[in-house]
Image: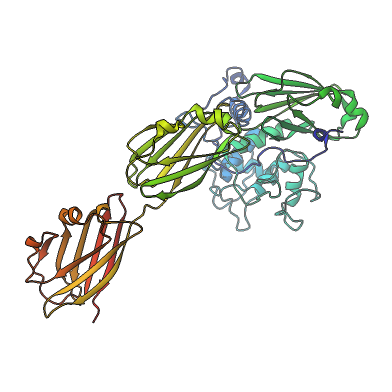
Length: 562
């Protein structure tokens, strides 16, 4: 058999976690005909949104509702009382407050808005409280608790822990059998290929999906792995469940869709598969324009099998007449990651990024680079030209210089805006791929500039001198402000000096600074320092504080050497 027909077992979709689903009262028979399918601004009907159908289905039946602002908040966590209300409505339990038995929880009285739902579930044997006779209505629901609630609520045959990939589920855990039951029925999978995360929470959207799957008892066919193998090839798989295998299949089709919902290719499983593998309960199909489906013999295909599929739909008709479908979705491929960002020489910097998920420069629609200083101001922008794609179509890495003296026009790879002066502290890469995927990534660095203490000594009976050195390639011309404050042994401020523009004018490339402390010194005539204070007394500490033009600030204390 070909590499695409290898048997595999991969997790279904992303595992379910906990949230605060808001439930609504179930409509009566007369109202049911008038119920309109609700829409939520944050649960869109897109090919990649696997939550749309579960949320819409449960909401249209009044099992769940959204918020007043028109959102559903699918990624918000659910607590135990909201989960209980949803389950009670989904299971269509008798919610007559006069008929349900009081569970006797100390934190749930009959006036509690979810009393009847909680009591009905307890009476049905679906949930229990804690050992201290509380229910914990505001506690978030864990995946372990959910596995028990779903197994008991939908009356699945509870199983014992057998073969599953979860390293965090052991036979001595009381919920192990419930987890195994949901896993075996392909209702849920783990948070990763090897973990179930039993103590993690469940979200509103996942709660809806969990109940939706359980109601429909998905298991005749289940979508499995759907991923990218190379730049232009993909594969998707499905598993036959409930004891079904290839010999039970009358027909099976696979349809591949792009993000816009257009069909990119279609395959119909040939009888050769059942002949060669009659007991197989899993299958996979390649999406590859260069694959020889005729020679392979397992699929009859229609379509070009080019482009990037984001949804695959399996439709199976069993010999018993049952027809089942399963869909699997994936996000568009294409990402970007930060790479080097640093000083090259002088005032020139360079930053890079790498294209990932099989993407190359030829896949780029647009790419923009923005450079920011420490204060967040944009100090340069560059847009990638077509020249790079023409000369290096298969390149997966991109770098851009930041240099006021660089000949961007002559270089030809970037259209630029801005002066490209100053010192960049952050660079932002924003790429839009031809398949429509948009990704932004930021890279930051600490702007350069520090100051170190040097000599501080007594030069005469009443005069002193202290110095400091600029480091990290900084010089006087890079300084915006610099002050020197003098203190006595008790911490009392004696005097202060602020460096003037004369120092910058006379010594722009200097990397060292010194200041005298002397009541007889003529600071005005000297011109290098603007002073405050009498400059009398005995200083034992001087503090130099510098702010560079790039925004970096540094302070250093210097103590008197005796």
